[in-house]
Image (cartoon, rainbow, N blue to C red; front, top):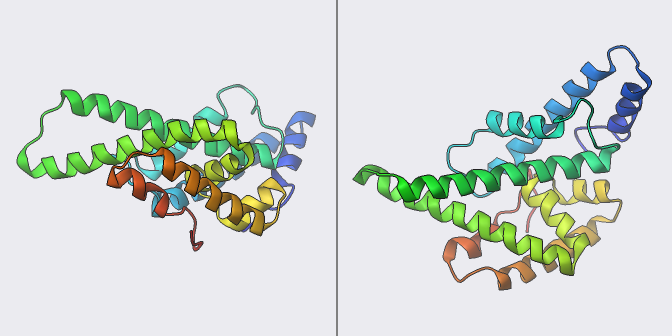
Length: 205
C-alpha cells in the first residue's frame, strides 16, 4: 500500500496505549493524512455528492473516528474499515439532508437542471447504501470489498492487502457484488450507472 506502511497503525496504537510521549500526536498526523488521501480518491472518480468538499469529508470522518478519548479500532484492517464506514455514513446522511432540503427548496431556472442532477445522485447513493445492507446479509466478504472500494476509495490491491486476500479474490468479489447490486437497484439510469465508476487511482471495473 502506498500510504500507511504495514504495521504503522497497529504500532502507533500500541505506543499510545503504552503512554509513549508524542504517540497521540503521531497517530493524529498519520490518520488525518490518510483520510485526506482516501477522501480525494473516493471523490475523484465516485458519484458526485452535493456541496461536500474533501476537507469537510475528512473533518467529519476524523470526528467520527475519534468520537471518544481513544480510537475504538485496534489495527490497520480495523482502521480502514472504520474510515470507509465513516465516509459511508457521512455521505449517506448528507444525501438524506439534501433530499429533505430539495423537497422544501426553491430554485431558479439556471439552478434547476443542476439541482435535479444532484437530487438524482443523492437518491442513487441512498438506494445503493440500502442495497449494500441487504447484500451484506447474503455475502459479507464481498460486501466488505464494496465498502472499502466504493466508500473508502481503496484500489483492488489495497483492498487485498487490508483484507488479507489475493487481488484476484478482490476482483472476483467486486464483479460479483456489482452484478448482485445491479439487480437490486432500480431501473433509473443514475442508479444503474453508480457502480460503473470504481473508486481508486488507476483501477478498472
